[in-house]
Image (cartoon, rainbow, N blue to C red):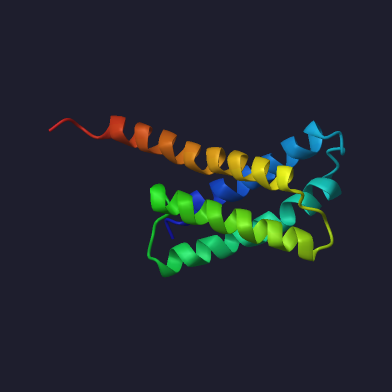
Length: 121
């Protein structure tokens, strides 16, 4: 059950990615628009978390970041195209960089905070 927290953070960051992306491109930040943008990446992110479950990974470490990011990115782009939307190479590149920074970034902060909480031996 501990996987709920990191999975929730990843899903929340996908939402942030969708909101910022739509706002940056003047596409409007309507609820429907944001949900439509986030949906393929949310589905892919959940699949990534199923993979992490099969790997018995708690999702807090580097492997969790890599698996979650890779499955979310590749699956999200594939589903986006399947849903009839576009996925030009510049979009894929930006999505790769932004999602990597978000997914790795929160885990790095988590590790730094957890490291400070441990008593010195």
